[in-house]
Length: 274
Image 1 (tube, rainbow, N blue to C red):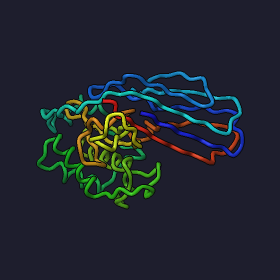
Image 2: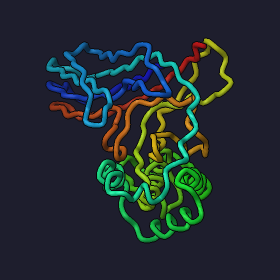
Image 3: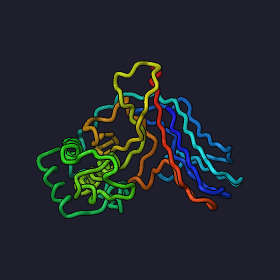
Image 4: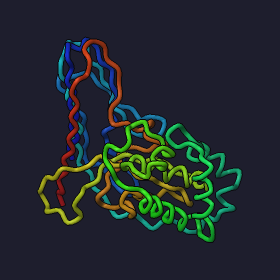
């Protein structure tokens, strides 16, 4: 898997400080075989895990440059997910211990704001269902109600704005699902990663992949569901990071001084190895 981001500037950039979240995480569904982040021009870098457990490569560059390329290279082994636990009840989710433990995954944010109409929809989706059933029903409802329209929203669009338009991309689908689940009292988090677009891809073939987003819900343990495609997270999904919303897991962020950014190109390539 290769994620390449290229920047172009209209004048030399003299200083640049950046953070890249391009390293997959190892968990109960995937194992990272190898991973590295490279830059051109070469930079000084160090890696750490952020508050949410996502690997971050921080790097800075102080030689004048008009272009910067950041490449994340990884080999990851993915598995089909285990079935979500069904033994957690709504009473369990409202217990003081659970509410305190998952306070941040139950809280609203700028991307995932409280909304009266969505709270009413959440009550409808919860009715007569177990927590696991409610998660799946919520993701499926978002899939049914929303139209996938690239360009209809921007990176800073909130879930409520996307819902009002009934249009968006995977980021909006995930944020909208999080509003509904948190309104029910189900701990839930935003997941960033990649999606291989071909489940029957030929081994060795390299295809254009996609940066992708989905959600994970806690119903006794964390498990993932993809509201953009209305299906469980599986072998085609590669997880990079988790957080409260997109703002916790941007692939690249930073500051620079000098020229103005005029060009941006992002290319994701994925090769099935086995």
